[in-house]
Amino acid sequence: MRIAVAAPTGHVGRHLVPMLIRAGVKPLLLLRDPDRLAPDVRPEVDVAEVDLLDADAVVRAVSGVDALYWVDPPPAGHNPLAEYKLATASAARAVTEGGVGRVVFQSSVGAERRHGMGEIDGLAATEVALNATDANVVHLRCGYFFTNLEYQVDAIRAGALQVLLPVNQPMAWVSPRDIAEVAAGRLLSEEWRGRIVQAVHGPADLSWQQVVGIISEAVGKPLEVERIPEEEMRGTLAGFGMSAEQIDSLVGMSTGFLGGFTPEQERSVHSTTPTTLAEWAYTELKPMLQ
Image (cartoon, rainbow, N blue to C red; front, side):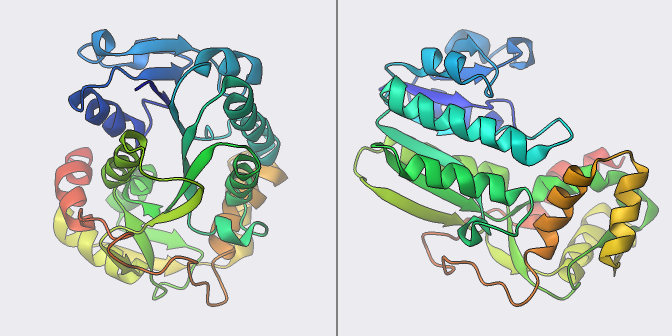
């Protein structure tokens, strides 16, 4: 079985690659900088040095693989949705022209709305494009990554987080490692067919109030959360030099969940994964604060 993995050094990919190696697979890794791979991983994998937004290069790299784990790369420019269009084109062409039979796509809760969800709209477009191919496709509709808190380490040190959602609104929170485990199972199995949506919701839905309580206990310092107006957040992001398109993309990923949003996939044994936020906070976040 030949399996290709896009973004193998990302939050999910860095767990997925060793899982596949332990399963006896020598995966093909698609990335721009092979030097980012851990030294012990490098001999166990094949590498294609490609930019995931370069559709021609991706098609050449994946030609002949049986299964592909696809991640739209995080946008780096001033127009995120334009970059998502390039990523979508790469994914669809890789599958169609490269002859890939099975695809596991790292999507997000909220992609089911298709529009009005900021950056998640880019993931929704990739879902639609992959569904239009002849491949068998699983869309992993993932909850909010625990690792997103790593971008707020300074705010956690200062003891205060600012968010756009109501602080008592619950949402799915998930460990990237658990996403990798679900992905590995799908990549290794040939027992599924068609267009499948599989939610990855973590062990529990949590509000920001619950999250700061868990984090505070894990790191051993007080932490509060405050909901701020959308315009205040926009002003803060503009102060960082972000473009209007970047601000719309980031803000939309929060405001799109307002108004009683309910995920299309209910929480069940299929969508519930084991790692708790407390476990992750003690083992991963706490050391970053020391």
